[in-house]
Length: 405
Image 1 (cartoon, one colour):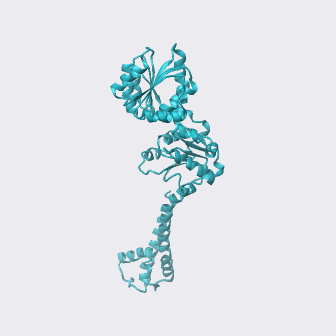
Image 2 (cartoon, rainbow, N blue to C red):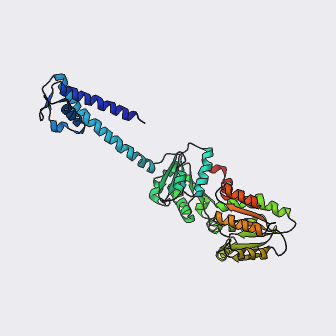
Image 3 (cartoon, one colour):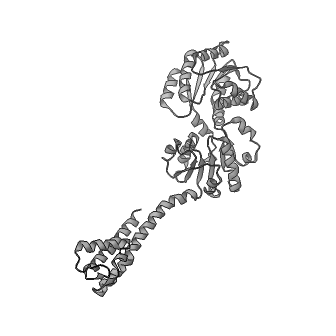
């Protein structure tokens, strides 16, 4: 890295001393009287040769032939050294820009700087520390920029992944894999369609995240979905939650367990879908609780739809409202059977508070609490209260096929 600086510095010193020596040996110049000038004057004009100072000094005259020849050489060498330094500086400034529009081959492209991208990159780097990764994010203020920059060989670019100009600059035909993990479902699928047209060889190597379960099913038969791996992170997590935890609970109780979905957003809807799909007839009445529960219920009715082998109760309200908690208790606890309560709102702090309230009001219940990020504090508090925390991010990553890495 420092070799060019040392070599250019050595050349500067040699040329400068040569010019000063020639002027001190009696060589004059046509436009200045330097023969009788002092050392500092000659040193000053010798330094000026590096900025085309010779144009002001005129041509070398008089003095020994060798010294005059040496001065002529420094007239050309000085400006060349300066020009080469300026040119190298310009190239060093332009090379990063060139890399941004011409990324290396066999690289991984990730669209989005959110938590899903961070989780994928963490797992990817456990397996491959050398492959270069390019992350595209259109929000320059996204907090994920800071976290993702901590990884080696990760290049952060600001841009819209659906932009044709951005896609053309990513050298997609040479990419190892493309993961579209932004929070915009339409943008992910739209970018996938454009990538397939721009780089048909990427068919089967594009991963696109769709957070809306209904939207994913509506687009499942499209050509884009057939040529890409479209997934829902909540579905990954819910599948493992139901298959590895809830099914065993249902099989171990002599009654059909009441279920409370405290938070019926994307995650709650996905859990209910997996319950209907993988544990039919194994659970009893279901209470759906959310501040926007009626809208969520309408969406779920359209796709994938409610099964008719259980009763459901809809409770609209804040999970932290004591009246809501009492209403849930009266809805699912009338038979005395201990419920399964899944606390899965989109806010970890709300989940913690609500879970503690449920543990107090339903001490015999199985309380399962969703969190997205690992929190030793949250896990310790929940375990002391008798609740069972699970990390959504870990379940999502665990559900990702090994081929994605």
